[in-house]
Length: 313
Length: 307
Image (cartoon, rainbow over all chains, first blue to last red; front, side):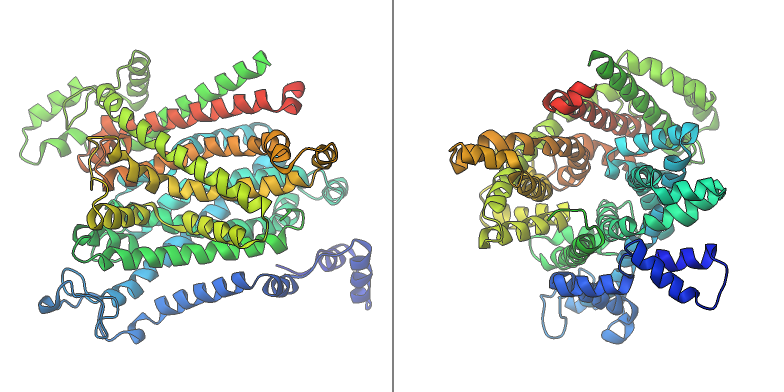
């Protein structure tokens, strides 16, 4: 995916010959080849320590979610009615909830849902938004008008209210949360990709491709879409936290994830009635949400700095 | 200029109609008769049928839609199933509260955001800059309910400075407004800082300095004027965010606003009320966008001349 443009070009449009590698090097020099993905990442690691730290935090959260059963000796639904609403202690790291369940354990299991609702709908909305954005920007005409008016309509609703209506339509549950978040978020992705494509459309290489008769679909998805990738990577790291926030807000209102499944937003909601005698019930999952969102935002900032050379800092 | 404005107005109206159609379709593809759900399982089928016919729910969706739009143009958004009052009256009384909340939140966000953004830009890379930018990222990353509950716990419950919930006095709006504005303050501060930094490098700023204007004069008379343009666009974008956040804030602080009305409508399966509140919020966002666009046109001579 991240092989250099020159290499790709050399492979596809040059006759195979023994020194094609050299040719790609030559081309690379000619067109001022950009850095590879890994050298970019190395540069980011060098320039922005905070982004690296955030990446590590995110990794820790993911590991915690995956290995949840090994990290705690409680199960997430085991009740201990003699030990209800107990304050954080060595026994229960973050205390227990109203049914005596260990909050640390529930936090670990809840992170599975929260991380998934961050990533899965974001991938869905990115894919959908990117395809529609490329078509809209490159094809223009009626397709553009149709897609963009639809996007206008979606973006006119305050996202929370739109998500509430779609959740009401679909009913609660994990899969429906995925669908809802994807439906709410595709429009802004489509708009951004479209504007990117509008600019790329005028570049020489697209014109060259058009002139030598490359089919429209190939231009859109082989030439334009991969060049939107840097933007989309940044967009991804910024959309994941907003999806996590929306999910937690939905679950907080009781419209998202349903019991017995647990998510951080649901934990905050359940703890709210004990805010005054056991504030940690709501606070601990809130802090978890904030940390993961913060980490993704820092990572997104770091990525944007290296991926977008035109942006001033 | 006028032509442009008319075109934008027409487009806004079309988008609003699209919103109405979309919400209408979404709320009508839910399987099952809403009346039957509303009246419970022991209701008489004849009664259910009569009610359905009375409310026009047996008509095709498109007919229902045009009836709804026709009514909406006359200010009639139907009658709430659960509260038995006209939706428009319910929205009108709720809107006052949401408006006060949103305006106060916006004011808080703007004052805090613009001031800290300016300080951060002027004292770039100082401790203050890092402090403000760290705080603004924290602001952007905190879920609204977290800010709200923290404020409620510490300032209302522990220190008893503010009422815990309710809107008997304006003081009741203060904490919700801060909770709601906190996120926006962060993004405003970041935007003001980055725009201002860019502008301060422009040649005309050097010219102004060379002509002997002091730091404050350059900032206020020359830089800020241009820095406000993208910030105004952001205001419109944030309107939608404020209305989203208001759903949570109003629920936590028990404010009878549009957001809470929508939540109540959902739990009561009250379709006319839900439809009304969501559509009303979309209308607010669309109007906000229209105003921001127009303002932008007036304020930016480059666009004005082109149009």
